Structures are given as C-alpha cells and as structure tokens.
Amino acid sequence: MNVETKTIEIIAQQAMLEPSDISLDSTLEEVGIDSLGLVESIFAIEEAFDISIPFNANNPTESEFDISSVRSIVAGIERLIKEQA
Image (tube, rainbow, N blue to C red; front, side, top):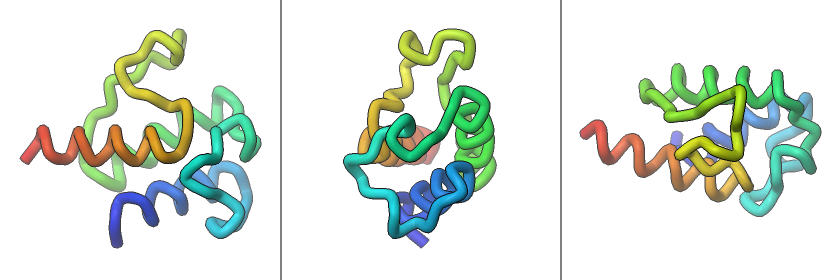
C-alpha cells in the first residue's frame, strides 16, 4: 500500500468518513478532524509508517510538519520515510 492511500485511510478513519470522501486537497478541518483527532491521526501515521513526526500538539501551526492539507501531510510522510532510509 502506498503512502497516499494509507494516509487517506487513517484520516478517513479518524473523521469517520469513507476514504473516497477525502481528496489530496482536503484540509483536516474540512473533513471534520478536530485537535484531538489530529493528535490521534499523527499517532496512527507514526505507527503505520514507523516514523517520528516532528509535531507540537500544543502549537500545531508552529510545527515543522505541514498539516495544511492531505497532500502536504503525504509529502511530509514521504520526506520522513526517505530521511530514515
């Protein structure tokens, strides 16, 4: 399974939506993920891809990890995977 598909599945699960309801251009806010759902999504992504995401839950806008859209999250995950290799 590729990074994009798995990430969308994780976000869909947290938002209680079908993966088909989420596009790469969706924002977490648009799909109904609140701050708790965001933290749970980050944990699920870290576990699924065996990575550590540089994310500050207390100040998400100041984190190194871009969560502005699903596309940016996928790109960030791919970058972290490459850095770990």
